[in-house]
Length: 173
Image 1 (tube, rainbow, N blue to C red):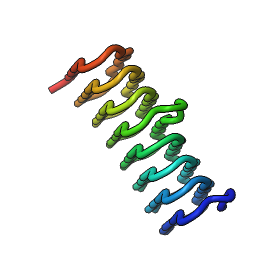
Image 2 (tube, one colour):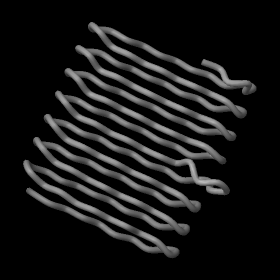
Image 3 (cartoon, helix red, strand yellow):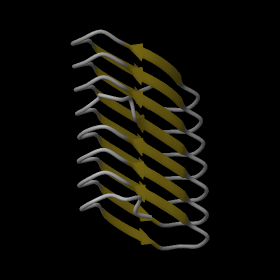
């Protein structure tokens, strides 16, 4: 769905059954790509502002991906394999720009929530195994957060502000 934008592009590829993809674009020069297979997977992308890039890859069953982008030049990537996973990326703060977020989840029943405001922040979440939760919030500028949860039943919460901070969380082996 185009919402009064200019030069926006959407590419949706669905295989499998009962999949749902919704893309809403306003602003200028935004790109959304969704590749979705399996059963009953749902993808939602909302883009406004300028030069946003959103990519969703999903397979398995009953996965949900949601990306919301506004302002300028954000990048969001979600890759989910397995069943009952949820990934949510929000990059909508007024005046924010150049934030990058990535959520990669394998296994089942994993949850990833990334919220970014400010500028030049990088968030990377990688979860394998089952029943892992990651909640990551970044404000300020030039911050980097990396979460790796490598087996089952891990949980992490990061609230990162200020400038130029780096945090790495590794759980499991």
